[in-house]
Image (tube, rainbow, N blue to C red; front, top):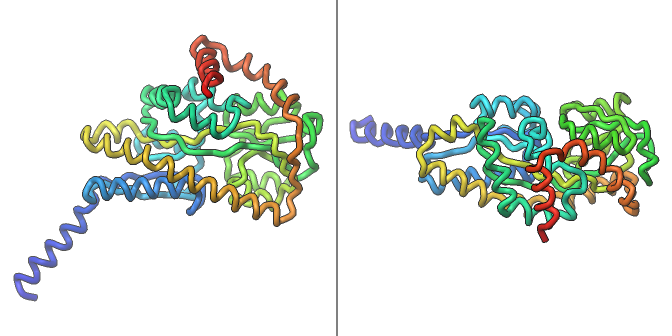
Length: 322
């Protein structure tokens, strides 16, 4: 090899090696192709382009780095840089996130968007700073409804005595209890086998999660009571964020915000596809259900969890949003 060629090869290797000065490790429990994973991939593409190739995102989907509770702790410690998590597991860590996890707090997905895209959403993202995290963006989690392996749920009375998996959140546990059921907090990855073996009767989630997890294979009844519309959140390890320049921090924050409409578009398509697949599989869907008794039963949940003036004010603000 000539010296000139050697210099050229050496420069190419150096360029490739130095292409990503910063590689952010990102976790998601959802599988490849899921809307939240697609959104973080888009964020990574934007960051790489806007930083001139300096900042890259490496995504570990399908719970490769652990279930949500574990990855939250790892992100707080700085072991994981970025993490897409439902707000539910944060309820016992950051009090203000409880309001977004209250049953029937949002009248619709559109109402939820109006809230998280505004001052209320920004204020709650700001609360993550005191817990070694930086809140970057909200993603959709759809509306959550009950599914089970035993029988169709046509009314609140049908829930009595049934065992349902919930996220590890006191709000969710109390929600199921208020409906007359028995709540069992379990990691997401254990739900399929737990339904299959009868440890639990069912769980509650949105169309894409019900489908992508395969839970519809072992739970043949799905009732669209839509008790929760809980946003997902993308967070970053504060230690990592603080180590970056102000310019790079701004790039990351903007790319995260810009990934939100991409996620929402992907969500709508995925939700439709998941619903079609579940219906085609023969799952019995209960659609015409009176939500009145479900909503009324939540009074005790609000009384228990909306106790401080700050939380009461947040609930009032959310309800006032058009």
